[in-house]
Length: 352
Image (cartoon, rainbow, N blue to C red; front, side):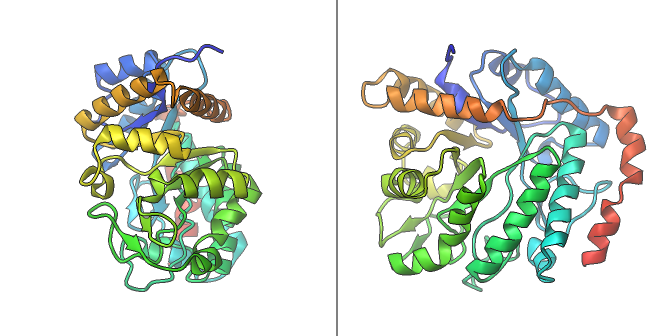
């Protein structure tokens, strides 16, 4: 297998509702592994379908690129009406019904597949153990590890049954923090015993269930490391890879987030995260961060210390991509017919 630019380890965001020419070229050359779409990219259903189809057409002849979105429900739902507007997962989970959570995951995923998306950054596996935590809050499936595990994995099973691939987040757990890693570098001073008892069980269960992708948390866990988990060899390589046996893709949370962007140069983040065991990187908005990240990845691929690690990450991400559905919508005409007939809005309304 010929491996191309190490930039293929990047999943990038962009501005606008049409595919920029330079990003289309990067997809053709596999200088990025895929894209992530936000509200700023999403117009009418027909426009979204056309945008996704353009990405599929621009991609190389290899495995499908990752075309991804944060579609959790509640306040983290990028695509809304005329799709179902889902309540927060805390509301879905309040009934304690695994079948309900699985149905929501499947319905949400079926809607995304109509547009050609193939990866959803869900479910949240964080335990809502701190009521003051606003960044996770009602995004979590439970305030105990048992509830969060049982119901989040039910949602994930439904999501994957739809043809989407899920991504559990935010390893090793963002639920007990007060700070928001979008805005600052949170620090959690809990003991390792507490972390193993509360934060980690949903991730342990996700690994055992075969989840194919996990996203890291830009959070410092002082009992273990003075670096954010994204940069921590202890968390990623020792615990997640060696102790838990995770063989899937480890994805960093967004490189634009202030938890890392305000504290570490991009090159340092890339080098340390790769060394820690991270395979792929979200770079959701800033073109300069994307440029520096691609440059750092290519530099790492030529270094004696990291070249093998880069090759390993490329192979792992490429293998994951072979499991993805094609990047192809059902088309504007079929969308116009299908969306009004979807029963998922009735399901969403029944939960509120």
